[in-house]
Length: 118
Image (cartoon, rainbow, N blue to C red; front, side, top):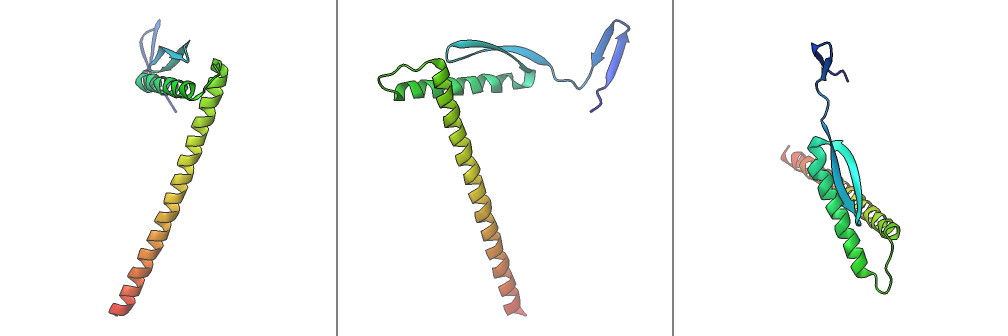
């Protein structure tokens, strides 16, 4: 990738087509984090942090009689998210397989219909 470089004076250098980065302060399980991310992804990062915090709250409510520490909570969240990704991946695979079967059936019906019409 070649960036366009524009000089306005020798001491000033402007690089175009570079994303602007911003520091974002988020909190995960009560622990503050400062993340540098592209400016156009700030809202997405904040939404992701909120979703993680929701999952952590859900897990805390589900666990009875024990107060897990943040590390344990984050491991449980990671395992839950991994399970969700696996389920979505399998669902997508199943849909592709069903679509392929439907396409093959439609092709067969069309072929049979054409042979009858001849």
